[in-house]
Structure formats: C-alpha cells, structure tokens
Image (cartoon, rainbow, N blue to C red):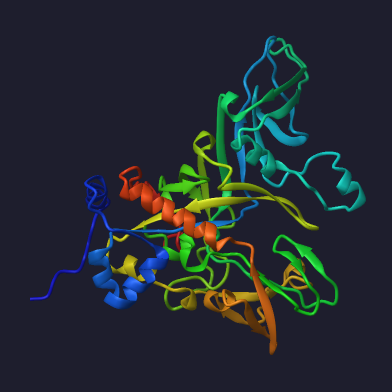
Length: 392
C-alpha cells in the first residue's frame, strides 16, 4: 500500500522545532537531497529550508524617532551626518533613505555622481554603535516653539529605529554587459566597453524568492532574518512583477517578485547591513536577508531543490538598451554558468563578477538554520500571500 502524499502544517513544523526534532537544511543542501530522494522523499525528511542573500538593495531606509527637546520642536528639515532625511512625518520622526547622498561632498564637486557617504552609511554607523550628528530645523508653531536642534546620538539613545525597506529580495535580476564603445558606470557596477565584463546580482539557488517562485509560503507577516535580527515581510515590494516569463520549473527568467520588509534596528548588526558607494552611480546599502521556507509538501520540496544550473537570467546591454527602455536580451545564462567566472556573449568569452556575496548568503542561511535548530526562531504563517500571476 503506497504512502499518502506529504502534507504538513505550520503548527506541526513549529511543534517539531520547539521539541528539537525538526530537520532544517539550507537551500544548497536541499539541492542534493531532492536529487537523491526525489521531491516526495525530500518532503518526508525535511521540515524547513533556509535561504539567504546579501546584496545592494537601493530601496531601503529607516524610520527614526530622535526624541524631543525643551522647548519642543516640530522638525521640517533633518540631517544626520549631513545626509538629508525626510521630515514630513511628525514632530521628531524622520525617514532616512539608503541612497540619499551627503551634502557638500567635496568629491562630488570634482566628479559629479561621486559620493563617499550616504544614508546607507548612516544606518551602518548607527548599527555599529557610533555617534551620529543630528541637525533639525523648524518653522515654529505655538505648540512647538523651537526652531533648531543639534545633538549627537547613538542607536541606543534613539527612542525608535525601524529598518523599513520598500523593495528588497529581488526574485532574479539581469546580467549586465556594455556593448557600447565607452565605459558606463551603473548600479550594476562599472561595465567595460565592447562587452569586456559581465556583472550579476543574485545568490542563485540560495536566493529567498527563487526557492518559493509562486509565493506559496511568503506573504504579509512572514518572519525573516533581516540585518542580523528578526524582521517581517509587510507587503509585496515596489516593482513586484509576478507576470515575468518563467522557466518550466516555475522560476522567473527575468526580474520578478519583490518584498517590502521591516525590523527593529536595535536587534541588528552592522555585519549584515553595509553602506556602499558605487563608482559613478552613488550610494546604496547592502542588506542581509534570509527567509525560511516550510516544506509543507512535495511541491515546496521540488521548488527548494532547484539548482544554479536550473536558474536562468538574461544578458542585458546597459551601454545603450537599458537606459533607453529597450528590453532585448543578448542571451540566457544559468547561475551555474555565471558562477564559473565566464560566460559567452555574442560568441565571445566574457568574465563575470557578482555584486551579491555568496559567502555572506551562506552565512545568513546557516545562521537562520542554527536559530531554528536551537528553538529560537519559529515560522510565522502569513496573513496574506504575495500576489502571484494567478491571483494578482
């Protein structure tokens, strides 16, 4: 008599985590398990697959409350370490964006587009325990008399600090080349002329949304690893595109889903949040993010067992096509090929380089795995799943 197909619940898996009985593996480990035992066999054996990514994520920032003064103030303009923060929120609330550049950077005066410091660096400095200098200006009201505030503060002294990123964890991204006759400086790094290098930005088989391509387990309220602490998915992210073309295994072959995430900065670490300056482009921030994928059934086991050789992206020209809104591809390549260090474009061998850190992605997946094995982290069933092509 054949066994019934595996069908688990979040409650059953969490009970196994609490009892120390859950089998938890990383997405890299799951590839071999599915290959050896098949999707159904893997689903019987494994309860959770952990994922990870550490990449530049420009659409990131933090809501901060910097505390009142006497007399009180209703800040209309705010700077932190000379980086402008948006103050149109409330009296002493602001939002600092990762890509906001420092004002009066002498390097920018010499080389337009060059910034050594920005919002992502401010967030990293706060997480590292460094003091930052805050300046606020106000127009003054009867209930908020003060017009200026200047003070040094640390993350510990902030009454509230919430990392809130509108678009993170991109489900696939382009492989960028430059077919023009001059170098171009982009958010994908510097691209040499005549297709002399190719840059990509994904952890491949470790990448969170690649392991749940149709968002069967990810949605509002999903508990995640964020910046070294615990965070949550709060919505689908900006530019979420579940209608992107897909491979027969369900994974998108072009940029697709995104997530909006948030978490308490006071739990986080500057190891997993880093300010970045990209030559000729500006500032951004690298974000460490990991999502546990519950293996509810054989379908989820199959999705998490997809390897780098079965994940594909498009080669896109950033020398002319991208900036002019032209969406043509110069070839489809697998992440297995990209990770070898060379791909072929137009019959030419081209060296590749990742903007996403594979060692850090592995560390995040392993850290999340250890949290769950130690009974410190449990699954949170989403209140609502992310929009998919079938339900958006």
